[in-house]
Length: 449
Image (cartoon, rainbow, N blue to C red; front, side):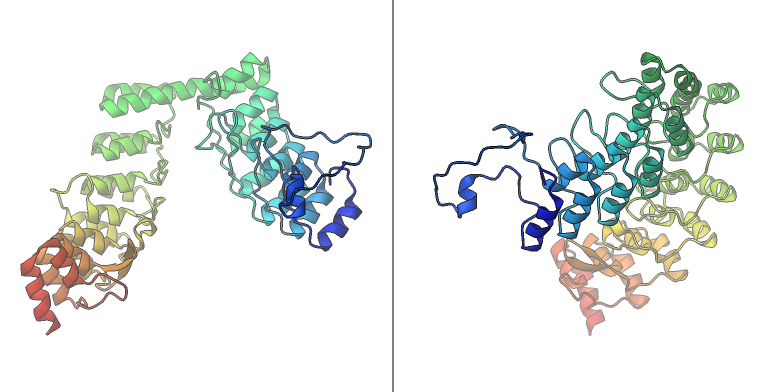
């Protein structure tokens, strides 16, 4: 492979050569660990550079991608090479994007290359950053279509910064159209993409991004005033052009207002065009925040403005689940809020993937919210739905019994909860015994009889 002898390499691979073996193999490895004295053959020109003692070894696939050799990459992948093989400098997809090879990028993605993989170098590098820095529009478009993050979460630099530093105006335009954050600070000098463009004297890009920088500065101030609850300043900033959907630490002005229970600010921001369905970094939107604080008025307003009642966060939670759990206001259990969400089409049996498939009924049961449990059961909640927790199957009855909520246990039994339901591990009676709830153990024994 190092000498570009594809036909010889093909023959060796067909005979069983391992395509993932290090190029820097020790002599004893070749003899099964037995020491053997030999004289190496003279190296013909051009010489092959040998890695130093401390230099990280590279795989043949990574080396082929670095060289932009599509035939070698195809051959190695066909023989089972790992498309996510890494070196200290990066991984195959990154190098393919750097080369601007659309065919190679397509092939690697089809074979399972991680589109958002990060190389631990210079604050983190992704394939999209290399495509952006190289001005490779087709490759960048493909990567974004396959899920590449335009605003990567785990890097210091962004693709927009890379394009701005290299002066690729068309790439900057494309990334902005795909939602690139022009106001994000990052890189070694902690500047925005516009600042980097100005430093590199890319005037057209700097002027385009400076206008967005100004709007972003207003947006950051807007978020600050919303957090303080200053209605007068919020109105003034919106009139001056602040972005009503600006994100600060992952939260928009609307999310902050909903989380703080500020109905007046929520109404104002919606009137100015705030998006009721934009999620924060954890996938939680304004409706979910309203549900968490138990605010019926806020939820009603957001639903009237077409908030998606079944939107999920990254853990699979929807607004109904947050209302059932009432994370931030456990003493203010609003049955009417749950009723409202159900009336607007919330899925009563939706499952939260982050909790092993737990439903709103389970969340309400474990948190002791009797009236919400009642409401959910009346609207068709599956009393025997099960989820998995720490390797055990759990139900609403098991959770309520373990938490010591006698009234909820009684209600669930009345509505047909199966006392013995737990194919794997913990049962309701065992959960009650572990929690020391003797009264619940007694009624469960009666139910078994």
